[in-house]
Amino acid sequence: MTRRDTADLLLLAALWGASFLFMRLGAAEFGPVALAFVRVAGAALLLVPLMLLKQQGGAWRTHGRAIAGIGIVNSALPFLLYAVAALALTTALLSVFNATVPIWGALIAWLWLKDRLSASRWLGLAIGVAGVVGLGWGKADVAAGEHGVSAAIGVAASLAATGLYGLGANVSRRWLQGVPPLAVAAGSQAAATLALVVPAALWWPAVNPGAKAWAAAIALSVLCTGLAYVLFFRLIARTGAATATSVTFLIPAFALLWGYLALGEVPTGTMLVGCGVILLGTALATGLLRWPLR
Image (cartoon, rainbow, N blue to C red):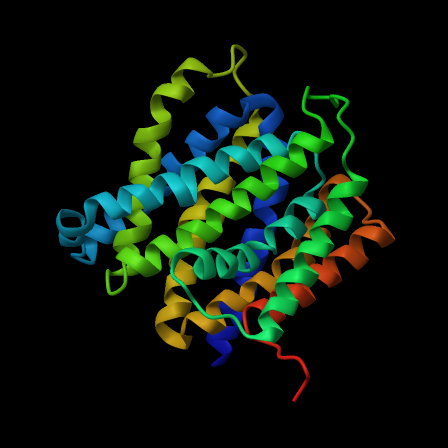
C-alpha cells in the first residue's frame, strides 16, 4: 500500500466509525425511518451525479434489478435497523457488532454458494459467534430504555443488520461481479431512497429535528455513506478487495474514540474483551489469520 492508500484506509475507518456516533446523535429526534431516508437520499445526491460524470450509468440498464436488490438488502434495511439499535446501544457496542459482518458473510457463502470452509475458518466462526453471544447476553435487558427501545431489541436489530450486510456481500458476488462499483453504490442508494420515501413521509417526526440532529444526519449521509463509498471503491481498485475490507478491524477503535470524545462513553472491560474475541473470530473466518499459526 502507498501512503495515499494507507491514508484512505484510515480515513474510511474514521468515517465508518463515526457513523455510529452520528446515528446516536440523530436517531432520537428523527426516528429510525426518517434518519435512514435522509442518509440514503443525501448519499444518492452525491453519488449519482458522480456516476454519470464517470459515464457508468449504462450498468443500470443491464443490472438494474440486482442493484435495486442491493439497495434494499445492503442499505435501506440495515440502515433502518442500525438506527433502531442506536436508540438503545452505545457507539462502541454498535461498532463491535458491526465487526461481525465478515463472519455472517462467510457463513452465508457456505450455506448459499457452497463455499468450502477450512477447519481454521470454522474455528473463526465459532469464536466470533461466542463473542457475540457473550456480549449480547450481558445486554439482554428487555425493559424499554429512554427512547422506548430495549437493549435486547437493540442487539437483535444490530445482528439482523450485520446479517443483511453479509447477505448483500454474497448477492454482489453472485450477480454483480464486473459491474462498475460506483454504479452499484450510486444505484443502490437511489433504490434505497425510493424504497424509504413513503415510509419516511408517514413517519416523519412531528417536531422538526434540531440543528444538532440535522448536522449529524447530513454528516452521516454525505461523509459516512457517500464519501465513504467513494473511498472504499477507490481502495478496492487500487489495493484489492482483501486489503479494502481490512477496514473492518479498524472501525471499532475509531468508534470507541468518537463515542468517548463526543458522548463520554467509556467502554467496559467486558466490551473490550468481547471486541477482541469477535475480531479474532473475524480474522480466522475470513482467512486473514490461520490456525495453527504459520
